[in-house]
Image (tube, rainbow, N blue to C red; front, side, top):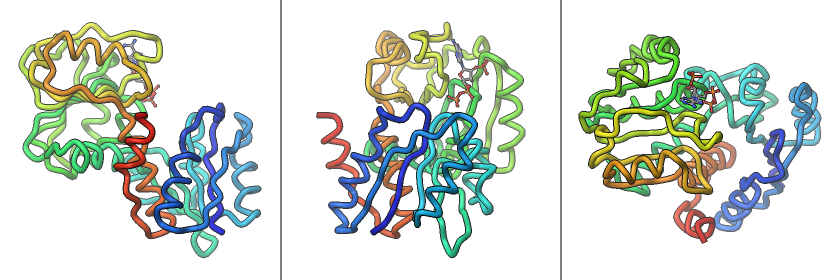
Length: 267
Ligand code: ATR
């Protein structure tokens, strides 16, 4: 029995147990994957309790990704650069922290949507934790340039500095976005949560692939993309399944088939 879980607060709406049950069925592994509601100030205690029950690993979601980063005794490069951990694996009693969010996004773009990132101009909206989590896997695909635009310009500039050695990035304020079309726009702001879309130059979306990290509903970003003639508009459901697949592989060594799982969830 492989004991897994997802920690969060709140956690009741998480789709992860359903996704991992489908992966387990596909791969023939016996997996128990549960939701654990940890107290806001009690992540470590709750995680240690689960580890003592014989856990092989677990996922971590809002608001515990930074707690998990500090909790891990060893970090992958991905997790280090993301500054956050969404996947913990217990191996020979060592607590290894990984972050599969960015890998999930890139796998959705490359494998599912057949979008080659090489030599593409990518514009990311937002410079918070979500952006930091996706930058390294994106830069590893050798885009021509990654532009990070944020309401608070200094945070975008800070990310530019931090990721300088991994590829060509630039950081600036949202108001500096030009009307020149780009290849891919990724919405990594949390503005959609408030039903908002920042007021930015619409011309950049003309003919672009517009990807919202959020899923589950049509977001203001997706409406904006449509109004500005985007070539393709995608939500983050594929990323959700792909990050789960990458975690599953990290724990079990088995790579699940994500396509039927994405189709099931879309239905
Ligand atoms: P997450 O982990 O989801 O990235 P975060 O670290 O709080 O959450 O970052 C939220 C991001 O959304 C930030 O880039 C934030 O911009 P600021 O750095 O200027 O705060 C951005 N954001 C949130 N609401 C926004 C809004 N209404 N318009 C523009 N950007 C917004």
